[in-house]
Length: 258
Ligand SMILES: [Mg+2]
Image 1 (cartoon, rainbow, N blue to C red):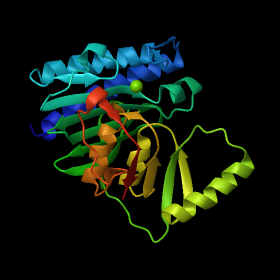
Image 2 (image 1 turned 120 degrees about the vertical axis):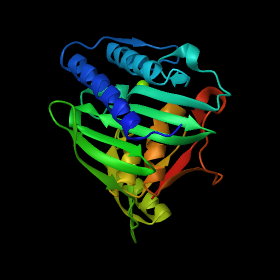
Image 3 (image 1 turned 90 degrees about the vertical axis):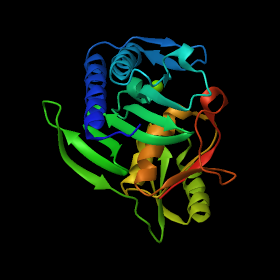
Image 4 (image 1 turned 180 degrees about the vertical axis):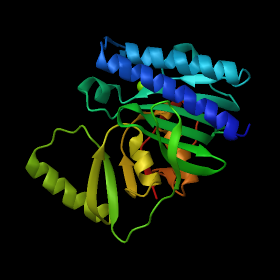
């Protein structure tokens, strides 16, 4: 299945609708509970999940869906499937910093062949179409405006992008900076929450995103597609290209690069 202009439009509208619903809840009343793995889930995650999954079922009835918020969907051995995280950065969402995203990816033969990341509170959308990656904004009616092709940028000295939440002291941070600057031949760090970090490499804002520890496939699949079509890649620590549909949909440590 190829995501042509018509399909792309449908997916963008789905993401927009889910994002508007998340923002409505964000401005009104967020209710939270803990999942079995102790991570938080809110009414916004669940409402956005319903909007996206219902839309995908309607437009693409033959393609199975794996979603973070659909427990019974986590079955592997699918040749092609949607991989959905209706609200990435639930912790950021609860903190109120606006860095949460809607993520939709299509996986085919273990590869992400389509990706969309929408950050509704900041009116930013990244998506792929016809083997290119794009950045755009929405007008008030939900139509895309100023869509432009994006691509990675190489630098003599790299710009690193790191996760936001840490809690180190100032002295520790200065010390740690020296070490990572040397390790990655870098001279700048930007900090960001959620899956948008991969988009910042895809659009040339940064060059390297090292990620240690476990993540889930739906956290990175859409960003991986956007990064690949922009000229970058995600590799595991044994230098293999990231694959999808792994046991438990879990990733090991990786490095994303321009
Ligand atoms: Mg989520």
